[in-house]
Length: 459
Ligand code: ARG
Image (tube, rainbow, N blue to C red; front, top):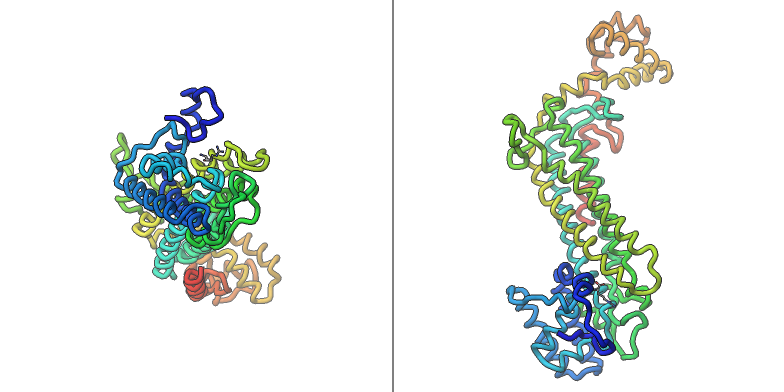
């Protein structure tokens, strides 16, 4: 097949080069956007009189048929036609004849590929945002069930202070709400229509770019033709937002993996979201969570790959940019795939409340509360800290916890201790007493749940 650009060439492309630079194997997934973009372009050309309304009608008709044929699986793409743009044009000309050759008037593959990816990404952002919305709803639901499920909060992976599972889950709700926000922001900058920028320098034809944008559902039209064909900021932003989503999922997965160990035993994963071992009959492994943690690196790689690909590019389009698609598609597929299994994995896990509470009772998680008790009795906090440090040391030597010390033992450490110390240091009480806004007390978390629900409605 002769090339659509073959006029100035005397020799054919080496077959090695043909395979090397062809992108049809991966950019065929843009077929729908490519055809929609072409339909809008042809319609606009017909309206402004660059081609006749009849010609526009024939082109649009032909493109619609091609779309249908591709969707029915009746189209075999041609590697020699390089990419999806030239494949569609070739199919069109084969179908409707010479008039098909007018479609590419006042257009270049450079503005064409830009419009295609933007349209594709816009749909995917909407999809991922709705997956995140469902995940947040699942977490809010779980948080409502576990308002008084006490567990230890950790710093340095050492038990620190008592919190509630609800509070812990709501930390992730905050992260995923920010992720949704970031995607909305990225969407705004993706929603800009580049057609009319041509190869790099616009066009001499009197295009109605606003009309094309309106037909394609874009909110804005690009303002500089050089930038419009070489801008992939939106793809970088998407990969950055996706990297954060993956990082959040990965941290959550790391906790799920730990919590599912026999040593923690805070949760049990549903059989449907765990896997066994081919040799060790007893094993029930958190493979799903591990795989999500592992796939996080791929998405970081996609982001770094894109940034590195773009960093040395002079204005305007360079073929390097064809490398944008595999990175972008991989990030999209990975994030979507992970969110798809993560949500039901969390929704179906069983919480071992007794083990969480038991762990909160050990490890002196109420030591701060003993110090706070003294501070409330007028002992300067730094002194109170010292006294309780000694109390903990004493307990360690006598294998007791702080609740088990007698009043005499307490008073030997500080005369400020009285009978009411015991009511102030039960771990349930310690969690429930942290009523400060943003804290783990049930009423504070309940309020945070309300705020999150309101945000979810407006995001
Ligand atoms: N397949 C190309 C890409 O993905 C389309 C643009 C090609 N433009 C060009 N001048 N070679 O970037």
